[in-house]
Image (cartoon, rainbow, N blue to C red; front, side, top):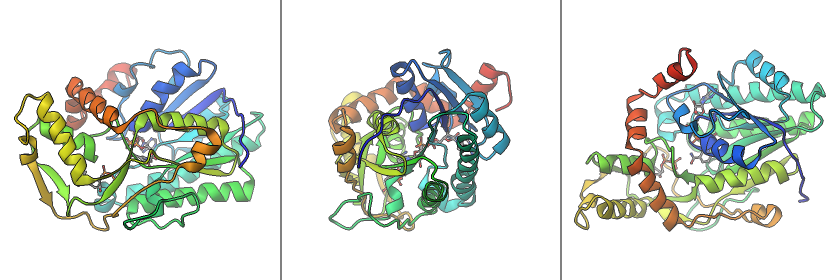
Length: 359
Ligand code: NAD
Ligand code: TYD
């Protein structure tokens, strides 16, 4: 596929106070001084403005607390800021929560996306900006589950298994439809599991680190042999910038780093790395491992073929897993206050102190 050379001047990032969105903004702003960034985030349990202290005083950055489902707010931001690219990260993102309460996943991930798409369409068609992109941050989970072999390509049929992945698939199909029906310049990327700083400790890797520090059990679902393909969040952030600028409207890119791990092997690795850092005997942390009942509908294996992205847009991951996981563990050890804050919910007060409003 040919490539584009889009130079955004005003980005609307949704969900920028979450894990991947905040890593994206923290990286993008210093590298792109000619572009303003507006972060629209509802600050749910997963959104934390402390992730953004590095950019909060930068004149190129503006935070708006609000919901992607608020069409008049979205319309006002698009018009006032002359937004020429929307990058849509905001979502309910945790599979286990989607099993215990799917409704908010449909509301946020499907209906929220449709409202954002519709306001983006009106803004784009109003001709207020000369070029426009709507960029949907999706996931490899829309492809369902793999057996022992093979990879997800961009042509793999969508076959989601969890309410989370079903809601993300619904959103992807709406994005596709806005491109087909209205000719809206949309892009979709589908990334594998991310890890790195500011990852909410309900997800596997930060949960392991936080539980080891707290000497709590390490729950391993089922037989622990489910496979995930891990990518450092900063490599994902770099890929998103590359795709935003280079992808042709209507295109889809997979993002991944060829880094498959069985869950139990990750658990053992994190235990061993933390044995050393906490001055424990080899094997001490592994004693915390507890096999628990499997997640219903648990996808067996994810593995991404990112060769289209690598060939067309010349992206490749900068992190090896060895460096990335060591750096991540060190970040969590150095930022235990952040973990304590997000697990207690006290970070919600930060918004009031910073912005004087009600979180
Ligand atoms: P996250 O849960 O850490 O953050 C989500 C953010 O969205 C939070 O800041 C939250 O406050 C905000 N938000 C939620 N509902 C909102 C609403 N209605 N209006 C405005 N803001 C709202 O999620 P994440 O892990 O950073 O994931 C970001 C995106 O990347 C998601 O779309 C997810 O599906 C996708 N993704 C995640 C991974 C991963 O490994 N985490 C992998 C591939 C794709
Ligand atoms: P998770 O981080 O929730 O990401 P996803 O479900 O989107 O892949 O889980 C990663 C893998 O780890 C997944 O196979 C489920 C498993 N898992 C556990 O075994 N124990 C846990 O406590 C959690 C949160 C996940």
